[in-house]
Image (tube, rainbow, N blue to C red; front, side, top):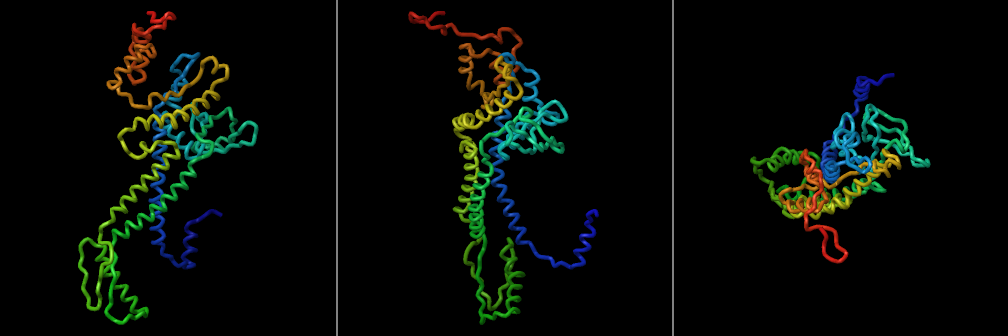
Length: 386
């Protein structure tokens, strides 16, 4: 029998199930949902730092040891598949790799490219791993072998659940600080009733109606009038609309602590997660050395061992993820360094232009390597030979 919403509501009305007010519960759920976003924002923000850096890397293709721009170069740097550019592809890969602790790259089931799987299951009990129930959008691949996939796992153990538990602890502290902040910012009054206390239900109901209809709107309004009644004396005991400076400082520090500890778990320097724009050069170098370079090598090695045979790799056919373009390069600030690099024969003019994003010069001399006359081989007798 098919499911019917109409019959469901008819049965509900017939039974006359009493409605239960859930306003308080909904407010608590909304507060938890808002606090949860502090943790998610920090985690995704740190992942964006990593993904943005990986997205700036260039997958360089080499054929017999010489750089070329062939089909593999185009695949990884421009268009991995029909529906994504390279930047979107790398962002999804990094997000899945760190959120789930692993990511899987498979051949595009509807084209010639590669895609990142949405979910999958690894059967690691076999001598050679098997990957099952691989979902790519609405498509599903039942089974692939180890040689058919690229498996990316940044850490031996997934750190995302640990970061989540750590975030829960900070959210409890933040929730307590917010309650303290709201209490100090609110108004708290006591009412002295100049008569013998009468605890019957009728008196309490009348008193509550007076509070709800006259006193509460007065406290919550920016401008209102409170009738003064004989027998009632109102005295303010705390609050007054001024929040404690200490409370706001505590909230900012706790919010920043979530970013700092999330970044620390991912080995990201505090200077990059704290929003401080001064003196980040050393922090960027540490970020590249501790996070990006190992991840780039991991991806590079997995791609090379699956897409090239051993003979091809040993003969110089390979892909290399170049991380040198991540740091912003100011050609005017580094003019002296550029001159030394060209003058020492390390790079040609066109190689330098490629590094800074300029078009190559269509001249033979631009591809040659130059060396200044004051540099030469060391003479065994001492001195230099030209």
